Image (cartoon, rainbow, N blue to C red; front, top):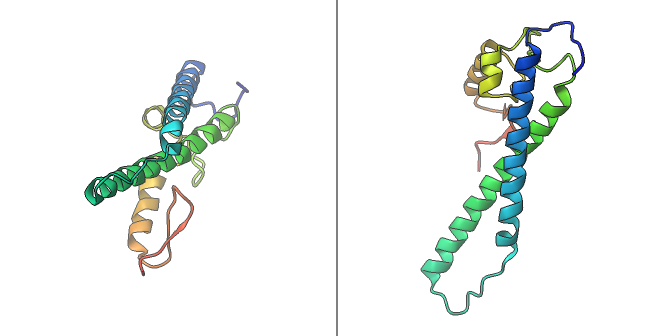
Length: 144
């Protein structure tokens, strides 16, 4: 790990966070690899009734949604791993203040201190039109 100008985290804390991120990354890799064969199986729907088929579709849709969520989280973990050796890790991207170890322990992918994150969420809730998801970086549309 490189030496940083704003060293508010000890080497022990950084190691603990790094181990946590690696463990999460490994967990997601394993989960996605285990689910892959299940997603590629094609079911023979010829002898099944409509309710069973509809139920299976709902389950597949939920699994896909969860896999997408896990994939996005995996990308955040990879970005965090790349930042861990830099001066940027553990520093708020909005105000530049150190992010507390407690917050990083709870959410090691945090890029904002708690104050800036709360403010960001308040702004997101108040801005009904043209809202943008901070997590996904996509605009959210409320019209059909």
